[in-house]
Amino acid sequence: MQSSPAEALMLLPEWARRLSARGGVEVRETLLGTWRRDGEEADRPIQLMLRHRAPSAQALLESGAMASEGEVTLDTVTLRVAGTRMVCWQTGRVEMELRSEEFLLVGGLHNMLWRGEPYRFRLETLKGAPVGDAILRLAPAPRAAEASPEPAAAP
Image 1 (cartoon, helix red, strand yellow):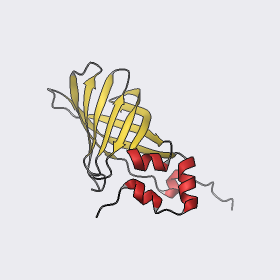
Image 2: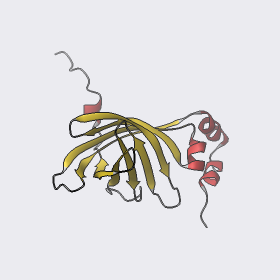
Image 3: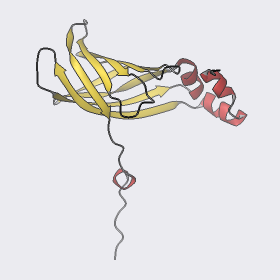
Image 4: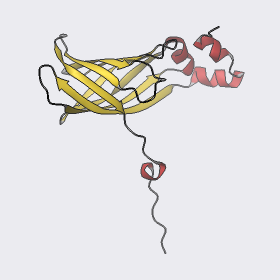
């Protein structure tokens, strides 16, 4: 028997359900990889720095939807992106659609439970013409010492 995300939320203590209903959920991720224009052999660098938000944990569990915004860097050009991130709780699939001033990135992750699996995106013009494909992976998380360097103690 499989329980739904809404049923899982109901198993939380009352204080956790109240907190979940009030507070939003935010996830930040950086994806690094390469992309290739259609018809070309050369791989080019791509980076996505994204922030995904849901109004509450309950809303996220019920719909799987999050609003996304951030930046994509293609080669040396950085563009703002905004769009959606959808999680299917039954399959683990993550789908994203991100729009910039020049491109549409459509893709995602086949199963978020498979560690190390890459995100795959199709790059298109805003009119839907194909541009290329990208393969990205989550950037390694910074170590605690790197993330918040403390000043050296005076001797």
